[in-house]
Length: 326
Image (cartoon, rainbow, N blue to C red; front, side, top):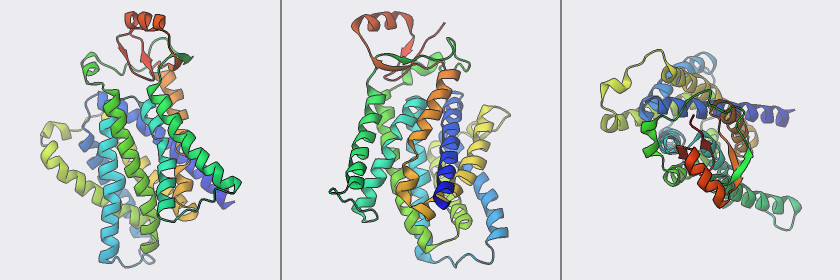
């Protein structure tokens, strides 16, 4: 029953993550600054989780030592400040579907880190050991093929016109799929380190709500410090009733509060590799939504004739999806 509950929890985590990817992509195209999003979402999460931690863990959380504080600070750097800033930069230069596809390297990178740190054991002579190695190779290969191999349509979007017109003309020149993919891959490695280190830090400070409160607090401080150099324009921080505000609230309440806590709970029960192996589910959720809302089309092969036709019909093409403009 515990494993079943953990599986359900991780499916919920990936559904929430998929929603975040979609909203973030829309909000960035509408002009939301990534540092503004990171700071605001973690301020919201700090206040919300801090209140819950005070009520529910006031009498049972352990004393916070200097060593534990430093570990949590580094944890916040890996899983929030570094990961989110690099990931959001990559998302600006790519699509939600590509970002989800490349995130599939997280299970294998987490597994490799866990093996190197002796948190996981691999016995090549056993069926389970060979399955782990084969799964790691397939995971990496599948992510790269999905992202960089463009061809004929495997699945066409459900709508001929996008329900959400995401790509404005002034954004086309900024699209750089190689750069975006490289940034997302780098962020995935940082996230894998966050998953591994979270299992270590939880043993030193086993209070989930308080731990996530401190992570969000340090993340808001770190990103706030970066904002002093890269986000000093006061107009960037002005909030209005629009999709940007919805994205900030969703990320603060759902992702940084509920999803982070749920993932911490799963890692404490099943370990970091178990939590990481559910990452590919986000691709399914994001891909289906993108086909409906953005009229994205997935490819598997392409001929020379299709290339000529496509250049005449499309305004913008990337290695995984095409957005037909009418």
